[in-house]
Amino acid sequence: MRFGITILPEHRWPEAAPRWRRAEELGFDHAWTYDHLVWAGLPDSPWFGALPTLIAAAMVTSTIQLGTFVSSPNYRHPYLFLRDLLAVDDISGGRLICGLGTGGDLDSGVLGDDLPLKARVDRFHEFVGLLDRLFREDHVDHDGAHYRTVNARTLPGPLRPPHPPFVIAANGPRVLRLAAAYGQGWVTFGTGGATLEEWWDGVAELSRRLDAAEAEAQRPQPLRRYLSLDGSPRFSLESVGLFEELVGRAAALGFTDVVSHWPRPDGVYAGREAILDEVASRLDDWR
Image (cartoon, rainbow, N blue to C red; front, top):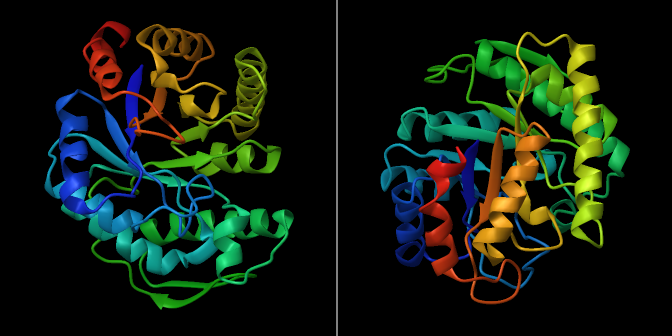
């Protein structure tokens, strides 16, 4: 099992930087930040851009992997996104993880985009396919339903060909198949549920659906499976005991990675940093 921590991009850098350093010192394998214009969970909170935040995080860390949780086509063209990803990948020394998702209503609505879900899924398929191609090829011509490139130059390329790991957020059947076709990892928050048991039932069903998608794609290697523990009705860092329980059940379902959130003083993900420290002291026991 590998362990990740998500640090929301809500703090000015003098306050945020110690958290990123501490995530590495505590022994987490990967650290993430949300990639939104506005996040529905904190719509009135201060908010900073994900990719500049990861560049800054790369400058104050040396070993921990750094990821977007997750980036979407709601306000990105694949070619412009490629250029930014190449910079983060280079500055971090190849530590970038590229979390990708279809995107929700709030970010798209801010920009006046009113595409229905099916159209956003269609766009996401084209987005992922073109992004994958841009990482692998130079002089890319593409004329699709949503994106166009003409002789797109892509040098210097990523440090770890063919590209930083794509970790694709997927719950529905079409995007699960996309993850199996293009991803190196799959991430899910689950499908809701009023109780912890209902949430686990949903996670188990999604895991079975991914099994089927991988079999259909005839993948030579299985995807890494990332579970956002805080998609459940309870905050994973509520206690060490709850965290240990969640990790054990995730492992039993075949998840290779779990991701929690840095405790906040109140509201969403409210908790105590003392619990984070105690959990971190036991990560090697659960690996």
